[in-house]
Amino acid sequence: MNPRPIYIPVILGTTRKGRMSANVARLLTGEVAKQSGVESDLIDIANLPLPTDDAGEAIKDGIFSEKMERADGIVIVAPEYNHGYCGLLKHVLDSCLKEYVHKAVGIVGVSAGPWGGTRVIQSLLPVMRELGLVNIFWDVNFTSVQNAFAADGTLLEPAYVGRIDKFLKELVWMSKTLRYGREQIALN
Amino acid sequence: MKCPRCGSPMNHHADKVFQVHDADSSTQKTFGGAVVEIHSCLACGAVATRSSS
Image (cartoon, rainbow over all chains, first blue to last red; front, side):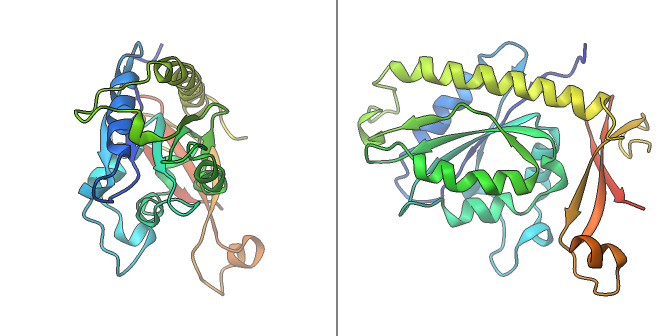
């Protein structure tokens, strides 16, 4: 077996002040780290010093690139803003490419309304595919996120823990499987 | 291909079109970009690329 632990960082995909998704991202990071043989890390895109006068790999950040290269899977916490994803999340994701190829991704949608970010998840799927990421078939949908956490960030709705566990079991399995493929199965 | 980080053998597991614009390139004319080989290191997990010939 490969001795390196599986590494699945969580990307907090918004820079908006007062973002409720920060609670979701912290919760997910803790739950990922509870998985056997898995390490995690919270990547807050607000902390990445990416310029906005250019885009793509021309503005690659060394630390983010290193984490994406090390990653076997990725969790993206994506709030839904006007039925779409945060533009700065796309800006960050576009700064890498080779780092993502044949790696697993799971998306956590977040919204203040009743749909839990289903539209932002759907709109991210073709982006994931073009980046070379492999999307799992479980999502997590945080509906009415303003009611899901206490002021101190404590989760108020325990049902999410079971949903997250199902999501992560699939993501870890896919991350292990794709690592094996990347390292052991040649294209030709 | 040897890993640029640790020197171990790498596995070629994907080809991917990278969107570069070189009108004179044959791969640009065929695929709309440069086809790049993606390699992963069996030992350390590093990722490396090289042009597909």
